[in-house]
Structures are given as structure tokens and as C-alpha cells.
Length: 232
Image (tube, rainbow, N blue to C red; front, side):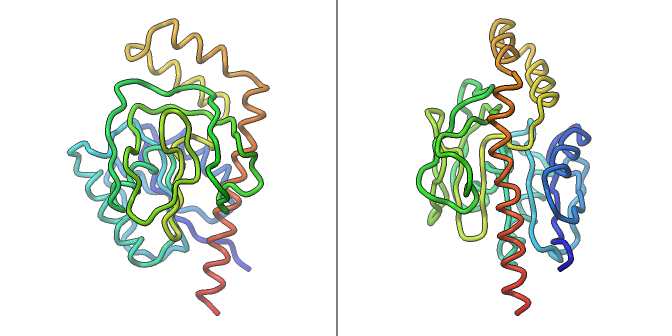
């Protein structure tokens, strides 16, 4: 069977690191679109799509964000499975009728996120996951008809609605990305806060967090199964 075809909707302003991380983890033929540059697919001729993280907020009045929401809404109506990560998690929540707002603080660093019941996206991953997080917005109301499958004290970290799956945390991050993102918060976080997060970016924490990368394989397997059922 040929590989699945995925649209990678890269919402990061600096595309290279995000592109590298997702291409490394997705076992698929990936066609990338840099959304802040105005790039979007011209059709829904894909097996599925992935929306990445971004330093933007989904409630900002930006043309590219509105265009991305419109395309994603059409993709969902067309029956494409989707995966959203961080900003992608929030954008999919917004498109599906949930609500996103600012937290007034950052959740950043390696944290524990608890699975809330069984879900195929997190199959094979321990119930109390170690994951890297960095966000100052969160989903405060899940979309109608969706099921929350991961959360911690900061709120919803994952939901599913039909063939749409999302996570607030960053399973795609390597240690280099975690350090770069953390040092990039200078001016937003205190020096002590940044130092504490950097001190936590250790080989042991990263190794534990790598378990969550299984969700990419789980998503791709679901897309393959859905494509097979559609073809049959």
C-alpha cells in the first residue's frame, strides 16, 4: 500500500524547526503549507491533515488565521481525519465550536498529563505521560459532542470528535527545540523561570517524553484504516 498523503499546515512563523520535527515523526507523504505566508491547499485531495503549533493566538484578527480556519472547516466537512498540536489543538477546538482564551500565565516545561479514559490516539502510552508544554492560551470549553481524553491542572490537553484528534502538548519536540523555545521567552518570563525550565530539559525527561511520540503512529494508522475503508 502506498503511503498516506497528509497536508502539513505549518502555523509557525519560523517554519524550519517545526517542519523538521513533524516530518521526522510522520510516516506519510507530507505536503507542507506555511500558513502565515498565506499558503494553503487548493483542494481536500489528501488522506488527512495536521495543524502545528504557533506563537499566534487563534482569536487574533489575522487574515491567514481566518483562511486556515475556513480550510480546516471544509476539510472536516469533507471527512478528512485531522490532528492538531498546541495552536492546532486550539484552532480545531474553535472551528468545532469550542472556546479558547488566554491563561494569564505560561505552562512551559516537562509536565505530567493524565489520560482521561481510553483513546486510540494515546494507545500504548502510559496513563500519566511526561510531555513538553509551552502555551499561554487554552481550551476552556470543549467542542460540543467531543470527548476529552487528556488533561492536567492547566486544563484540557486532548480531545477527540469523530476523526479529529488534538493535543495541547508538543510530542514532536526534540531537546534542541525545547531549549530554543524556552530561551525565546526572554522578556515574557523571568530569568529564574527560564532557568528552571532549562534545568528540566534533561536526557531523562526527554526520554520519558519520547513515549508520547507514539501518537503520531497511532494517528497515521487511523488515517490508513479510514482510507482503506473508504476505498473498499
